[in-house]
Length: 134
Image (cartoon, rainbow, N blue to C red):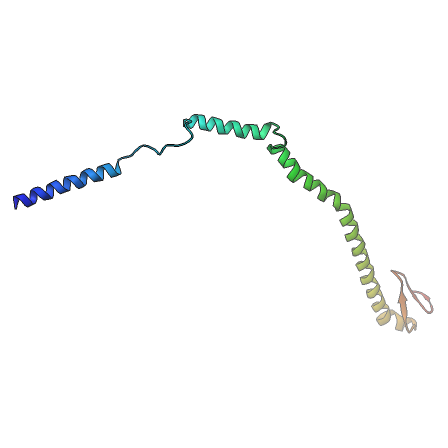
C-alpha cells in the first residue's frame, strides 16, 4: 500500500509540473513589427496627422470630404430651384383646379338658383353666368 501511495504521489507531482508548464505565461509569438508600443502609437499618430493635414495627391481627409460630400451637396443645391419651380407650378395648378371646382359647385348649388341662372361657368377664379358677373 505504501508503494501504491508513492506511485500516486509521483504521478500527482508530474501532473502538477505539467499543469504549471502549461499555464505559465510564455513568450509572445514573434511579430513582423518590432516597434515597441510607444513607437507604434507615435507612428500611427503620425500617419493620421498626415492624412488629416497634408496633401497626398488628393488622398487626405479634406480632399475626400470635399469630393465626396461638398461637391455632391453643391450639385443637389443647384438642382433645388428647378425642383421648387416644378413643385410650385404643380401646386398652383392643383389649387386653381380645386378652387374652380369649389366655386362651380357652390355656384351651381346655391347662387345659380337665387339669381335664376341655369348654369355657371368658372374660368380661373372669376365666375361668369348668362346674366353677368356674380
